[in-house]
Image (cartoon, rainbow, N blue to C red):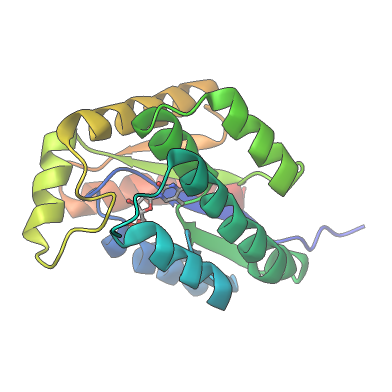
Length: 210
Ligand code: TMP
């Protein structure tokens, strides 16, 4: 029987790694191959999940505990998976998601120090056996990413306001995840000229097109 299921691609990385530039690039590349693509993001991607995103990104008088933070991430993910991601994949669309559960390992696990086993448990609980087919990890040294993010201007959100050591731990866990799942997670060196970054991205996408 023909497999009509779409492919699930996620884009990951710390702050200022160039996701905003590369999401439309990947979308165009796939669409030019006549692949139907749904572009979405986490936290968010549905009306309710976007409301949860606001709760997560805005700073409040009442501090958000790390337990509440991770549960809100997975609550948003449950909505997003069931209302957007799974239906799209079932229809044969490809889904390109700006961040997914590797971000939870990196930010809540690395940054906040939550046990990776706990995250693994929540991942299985919410996702069952659904995992991305391909994860592009845009990687730049933390100082470069933070400078880029600050130069974007505007107010910094609750995560962007974190310090260097937080983002060093985020990057460390991302790289650890890539080492653990080398078939799924492809590291894209993103502190090189954009043409070279995008050539590397195409190289990784081609693995899905074989
Ligand atoms: P964005 O800056 O890519 O839009 O993502 C919003 C922030 O949410 C970003 O700082 C990373 C953070 N985040 C987590 O901490 N855990 C997660 O699981 C996800 C998806 C995002």
